[in-house]
Image 1 (cartoon, one colour):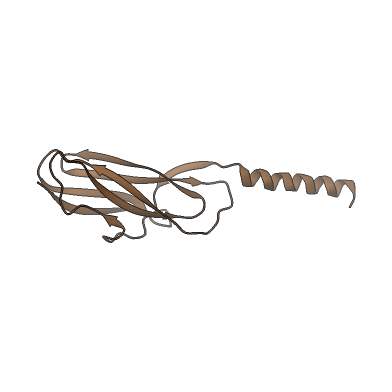
Image 2 (cartoon, helix red, strand yellow):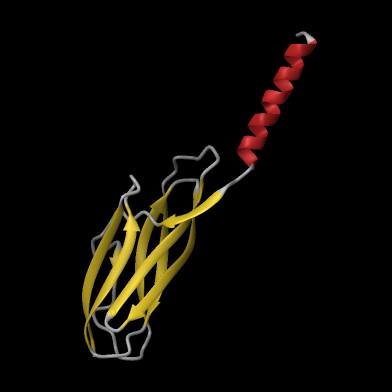
Length: 136
């Protein structure tokens, strides 16, 4: 192999190593593929002033890691946003991974509450899943 070919091969190898080890991450709404009661678990009811947990199962591949879950409660509406960190500059494994996001929700008044879960599909389309629960 001549010298130019060896240098080219060296630079190509360094490029591949650099491309595989530099990770650029972004935070996105989590991918929710099961909107049934198995994928989104809610309490049957809430008690005023008492925190309870909503669990949301999300999915991803080898370039996804679970991040946080944001919760905002306004009156009888709780908006829950599970988010994941997504690697955007790398080769990813196609291994399917599941994550369980847990959201603590506390309502301060009685009535019929709405749990609004924001997520996305595999094709990055936003979805909204709502559940009604009594607050006593």
